Amino acid sequence: MSKSDFSQNLLASSRKPQTAAEKIPIIARGAVSDRAKETLNLVEKFVEEECVPADVLFHAQVGEGEKRWSTYPPVIDELKARAKKLGLWNMFLPKNHFKEGAGFSNLEYGLMAEYMGKCRTASEATNCAAPDTGNMEVLAKYGNEAQKKQWLTPLLNGDIRSAFLMTEPDVASSDATNITLSMTKQGNDYILNGSKWWSSGAGDPRCKIYIVMGKSDPNNSNVYKQQSVILVPAGTKGVTVKRVLSVYGYDDAPHGHAHITFENVRVPASNMVLGEGRGFEIIQGRLGPGRIHHAMRSIGAAEKALDWMIARVNDPTKKPFGKLLAEHGVILEWIAKSRLEIDAARLIVLNAAMKIDEKDAKSALKEIAEAKVMVPQMALTVIDRAVQSYGGAGVCQDTPLANMWAQIRTLRIADGPDEVHLQQMGKNENKRGAEVREKLDRQKQMGERLLRESGVQQKSKL
Image (cartoon, rainbow, N blue to C red; front, top):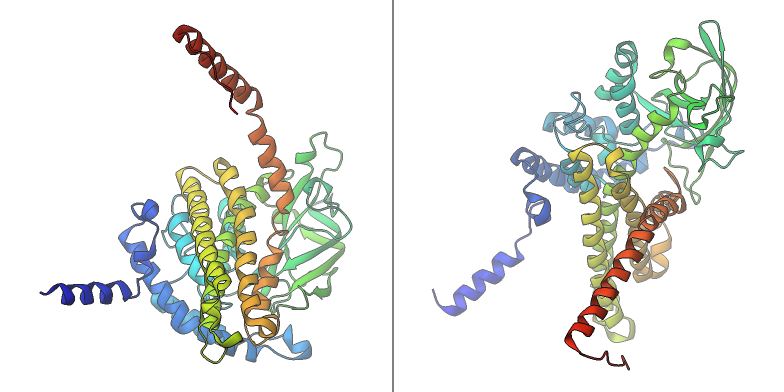
């Protein structure tokens, strides 16, 4: 083979698109099973070739007027049937904590979730969509056998959907001790009064169960033992969906983010999850994995935005000042920065997933917080660059970018605002203050002793 032929073959092989498994960062590759790699390649193909094209049909099938909340796009059922046939179902339940899942680790699912974050339909098609994922984890981890049979089984089968009700409109819900929805014990029931909002998924006609956090023991001296979590069937007497909230003008039908009121809602005491006063324990167990799932999908959204940006800047019909956008230096810098930021953020996410796999979410609080804060900010930056490259088209319905930005922006608030996580991370990091001062003082003294023993004078740093 001549040197020229060898060079041509090398160039051809370098241009060959990598499979999803081949793209796994080298530091994580050894922790991913062959079965997971095969499934990852299948997820990529399913998302790119079936779900992304189906997004157009999904949005076209969303109803008008009241039908936005009484029907759902039929294409979802077709995609779910296809996903089940391919074996792409319930991948999110980690094998070291749950027997009900598909047998993957958090790391392996994280790699899959990245691809599912590239479109609207993929997560739901594979039964890996929020808030059902977190709700299923709650029921699988904390629910009793009767609760699992009634609610977990149909959720795992994809027959129903669910909502998680925690945030309230009249208090600062970033501090969950402020939750005020009351749960008063009366005989064999609890009576619920109060309101919740940003109840994601409650607009869907398939939503049959609410997982509700409220205050059952307001006088408990331990503020973290005052709350409980209870199961409330949708449609229970006294439950009213007051309105569906929009996200920067998007109503996310038929999923929806509902404002719900409870007026003397009677729920059997047997619907209490884990036990009275265990609410904080449950929500911490739920929100940890939920935060990492959002971060995983956000990586995929950022990759999609970068794809759209690269497509735009190489569009031969768009030549400002006589050149392709890609021929302008600032654009290439945007592309390079986006690649750097996405790849760095991915490592943060996978590190958190591996830390959870090593033990549990509680042992990975720092790593989860890092991913929760860093990844949405990164994705918003990348999406914004893509929007800028499209000009007016970037902020309208002609591209998916405006909707993507709106969805990702909520993640800086959802599951605890960035500031709460940063404050806790800062406090924990600052605990090293005395240790760091002692180390630096000791190193300074050692340096001074070496100077004395060597008979050398320290020179001016200037």
